[in-house]
Image 1 (cartoon, rainbow, N blue to C red):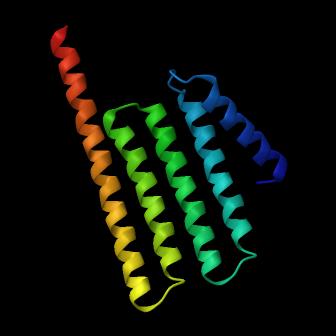
Image 2 (cartoon, rainbow, N blue to C red):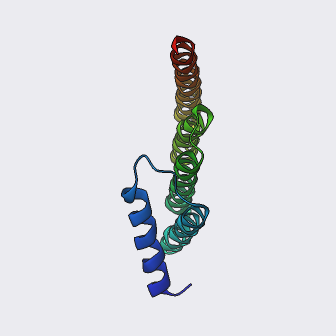
Length: 148
C-alpha cells in the first residue's frame, strides 16, 4: 500500500469513526475502517524496525495492542452489544498486560518476578472488572425490558 492510499484510508476511518456516534457503520464502512486499522498496524510495526532489543519488543506489543483495541472498538460499533463492549475492555486489558510483561523483561531476579506477578494481577483484575461491567449492563437491560 502506498503512502497516499494509507492516508486516504486513515482519513476515511477517522471520518467514519467520528461521523456517527450512534449509527452503525455499513458493511463497506466497516471493511474500510478495518483495512485502515490494519494499515496503521503495519506503519506502527515498521516504526519499531529501527529499534532493537526489548525496546523493539515493547514497541511491537504496543502496536499489536493498539490494533487489537481498535478492531474490538470497531466491532463493538458495528455489532453493538454488552459482549462487544466486554471484548473492548478485555482487549485493552490484554494489550496492557502484554506491554507490561515486555517491560518486565528489562528486569531480573526478584524484581522481574514481582513485576510479572503485578502485571498478571492487574490483568486479572481488569478482566474481572470488564466481566462485572458486562453483567451490570445485562442486568440493567433486563430491568429496563421488564418495565415495558
